[in-house]
Amino acid sequence: MTVVLSAKAAANNPMAIMEPLGNMLLPAAPNSENAGIVMASDLNRFNEFDYDARSELISERLKSLMELYMPKYDFKPVIYWDTAKKEQAIFWRFRPPFYEEYQATYRNDGIVSYISLPNNSAPIVFTARSPKGIQSIVVRMAVAESALHRSILGLKFTRLPE
Image (cartoon, rainbow, N blue to C red; front, side, top):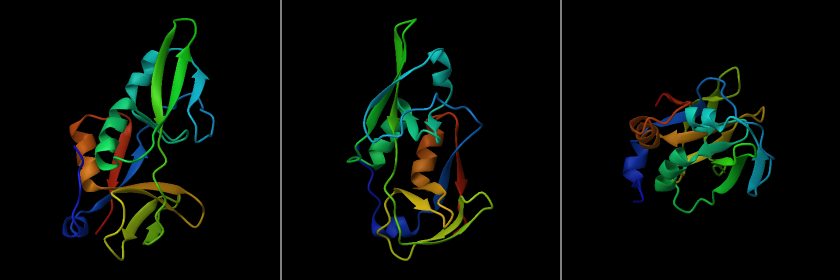
């Protein structure tokens, strides 16, 4: 199922910032556009969250949701391999496209606190960059609400004022 927002619906659909909740981090993955393998241990803790902003990775559960809104996005796998237990956990590289046609204000940490889109051509999920180079993932509220209904872990959405 692909979710499409009409121009009218997009204009009336508020935005939110997607941020990690807490400080759970996966072992650092190579900063590459390609698939990768990372040696790790204790893969059980990988089930406790679905988003790692540092390595720009999302879980299979969050990937399934994002595919509904971004059907043509090319997700690349990053496989965490526990050689001792012969187990693996798969996360997916997630770097939404940059979008430049907006006006924004930012929090002290550089994350978007307000965004104004001059037209309805903005993607449903995109990355905005602050003048300091800090990247924020901006999503339509439909995406945030879908994630909340699916009990996605380790992720919060901060609604942006309209």
